[in-house]
Image (cartoon, rainbow, N blue to C red; front, side, top):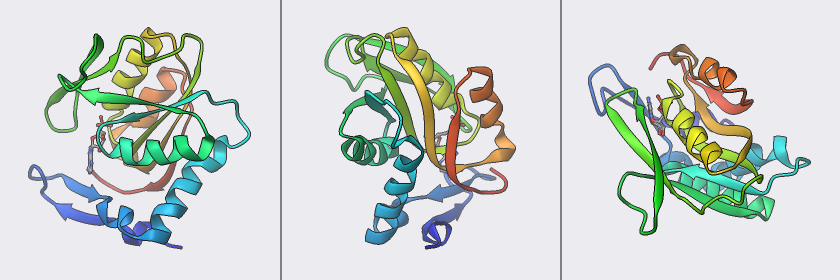
Length: 175
Ligand code: AMP
């Protein structure tokens, strides 16, 4: 199955020069969505994973399904101001703009082995902020899993510097 063909590309969204990789078209395809989740889970099926963390918002759709498949709990890494309880946060630079991610201060069982899931890695800034937060809360980050990598934007090096292995199902050229 060609997962790449199920992803819609929207040129110049949300800013000129950005090729937005829209995976809602992949989510909308029953076989494509199932295959995507199976492929995200597959490398970690034999590993000891205690929880999956997903990054808002598309990482929730994927991460929730991956957590279900692995029979583990799910940790939402949310955008600023959304969580109702006491939070810890980290700021990061986006490919376009800046933002902040937060988790509940008690979201992680200290020492637990966490798999981080998001739809796409570009510069790696979002994932790095998520990793920083989860580590601050006591997580051991086993790996990160993405549907898409944009290799030209350097996310692989950011994760290598953090000592976190990652797996991406597809690569796209450019930004
Ligand atoms: P980054 O922090 O640069 O690795 O950016 C990753 C985050 O921004 C992910 O949560 C993506 O959903 C989103 N993102 C960045 N670039 C794109 C793009 N070209 N198409 C779709 N989403 C993107």
